[in-house]
Image (cartoon, rainbow, N blue to C red; front, side, top):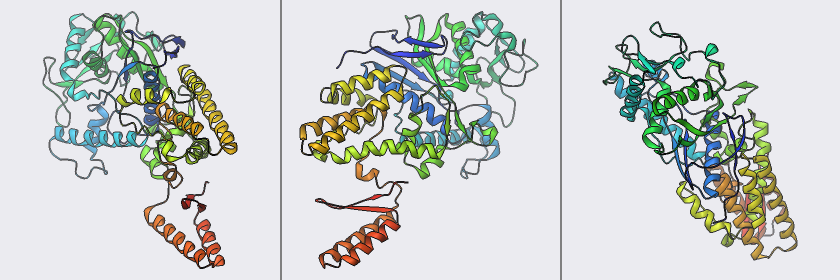
Length: 504
């Protein structure tokens, strides 16, 4: 494998790019805050997942062994409210037992989330812990915070963290303690309004609570991630618990600030060496939010566009910038993807290298297979761009230049099999790194055409071939025009008549 190139990463604490150095040579322990599973995933989830999927791929391409975790918050105030409201899209939600209903609802939305991520080419995490499966670790951490005096008990088994006792509180988000705001309305049993809940006591019928040494109750939102990291990822002998902690910019405060505080108080160590945050997704100029009524579910986008087209669009804006989602920009970005598939279509199928990556564990194997056979300068330039805090605009320009140069060469040397194979490996590396270009070119250019329409197209093509065989060229031309009216373009090739859906 090629020597590691320098990696620059924008750290949210330092507010600047830093040289990336893992805590242990060759290893990266990477944690991403996953969704609270009370509804279907939206485009904000998609952007975050694609961003950190790309970071994971880039780190592996640089030779790191990455242990990647993404949690599911499956116990939360919003989830409890949802099971009380009997959501319309879950008609078979079990009634009666609130715990059975909780599991039924969260399992449904976890499956929905994973289905959407699969469609977007987001590789599954190595670890996918759930809050309800992490209760012993959560309770243990809370007990430690109580024992050390950082936490205190309120009324009805509630437990809070006193942020006044953490002199470093605010160091992540730069929020001053005097101006912090509680995520929820101030409870009467808090010593200070800015203190946050580690454990929420059981409130009676309709609530969810688990028996524990803390009393019957359930975890607060923030403690879940800290405890999961301790249980699954934490280094034992490093000054930080993990290398990278990541999530959306909306999580920086209070969620990540509170996570950092809990871990600092409980372990006397900082939670993460580097903190990464992706920017918001706006629709019509407003931050995506259910409260604004403009949340755009991933499923809605996938009904219209293939997941790779959506992924390509969301990749195209640098991950730390705000992305203003609109369909016109999506179609513009698709033209860039079209160029990639046009080149792929020019290459002989027998020369193509098709990674078909199903899991992150396969990235390294395919990278090693491809990197020595692709164009060395292309590989270096592409990886250097992505190593610079995912400089996607630079990486995409490198890819576009490769595609343009390849087409120029093939125009002059259409039978240069050696060059074709190098180009095929270049495209394979784009697939491995960016997760785009994964489809067969014929399939790609027929996206959006349903099966019944495909059957009609094939029937018309057969009729046209018959008309041509009978030298009825007027009929053959008429059928071509009928297909064009359907939005279908046909091409006569040595391999037969091919067809594509016309571009917008």
